[in-house]
Image (tube, rainbow, N blue to C red):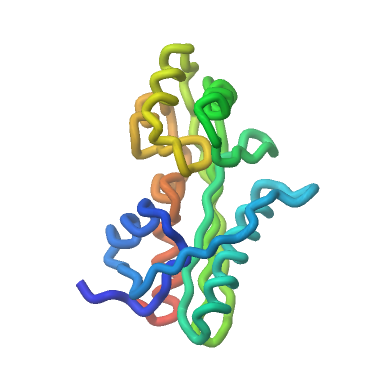
Length: 190
């Protein structure tokens, strides 16, 4: 399959796999390392949109006159953003917070075309988790599949604890495919 005329500003293997699933293999992958600190007063939606935009802008600056696609996905409980846990103890606290609750998974995508036009989309989904006992939490934390992501990976063993999903599965994995495909088709990438 021929590579498509865009650069993916992400090192996420999940985002690349999702794109390939719908026939969109980027011509290059150029991750953008940016400061991911939450700003004071920033809501989860504001934060994830800003992250996707900043990743795209950094990549566009380094790769002028190219189509750039960037994305970011977070998990939020209320207005609290769950950042990537740095160790098992932090992840245990995350799982205790998610247990028996509904969390929001918010994915933002940003496409900057060759002319510099910026297009953004944001998708919010809900994940309702069963009440997890201490043994289940310890088992999930020991799996280490949570490393490198915010909260959990829905495509792994965590799926066994999910009672219900309301929204876009691909967005929860890391990229809202319906919106991405429409953005790329909108600039002539088919």
